Length: 326
Image (tube, rainbow, N blue to C red; front, side, top):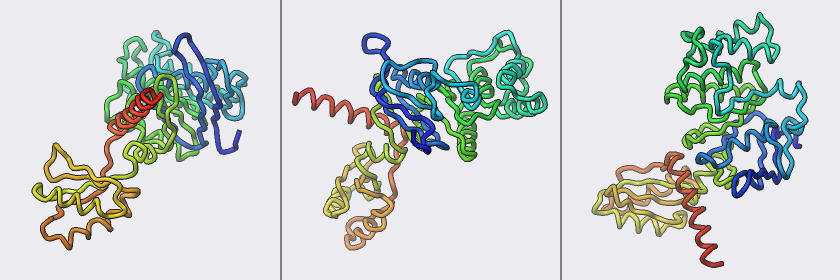
């Protein structure tokens, strides 16, 4: 295991029967990073996290977390790990505060430190007013917040968070991600699974899963480039001159392709290698063409929901092409 990687998976399979399971997983998670696993429900994200924490044992391949096989974790390894499972596993007959007291005792958090830490986390997850409410009386979103507080009580080096923002309102979801980035700035590592594809933008590395297989691992910008085939400059001109503008752009060697919008008259997109360097080159092109008035030009950065759809469409297109040619 390389010193810079806190998690390494090599050629890992875990089969549940039929086509269910995860296959050929190869993952490196650098220390001090946020790694997100995105994909639809049932794609294998939770199974991957459970393999990493030692709840499952692989049928094939090797896993090393903090230099150790998860199946051989010792107490000092587990003390450095926080795990927020997808399902609520705390005690429904204990209050919010009693649940956190219990979790703190499991990790040996001192009584002096415990009181302050619980107060901090209750404030962070906005459960201070519900501290005496039973776990069974909490809403789904409140249970997620309590689970997150419990996973952070002992200030772990490595946090596994399985769908941490499921059922959380958008404002609190943003607050969670602010906290995750703060943990990363402290040198901690986070492995997060999520169905909210847009959350990929908050991460250092993103793995895209489907049907138990890892399709890509890349940075958010890298995924955007994969989906778009580079980067995109979006321009707006008078609708009557949009085709003339497209010809001007297409003739320049740094432009790989040009698309004219069907839904928004006068809007077109130029596909380039790097938008930041292309913009100052492309904008002056229209100075010598008085018949084309450039209204606006900027880099086009579609939301990650759209990026994910584009990536899946590319995968499906490539698969259909292989089947047709095979």
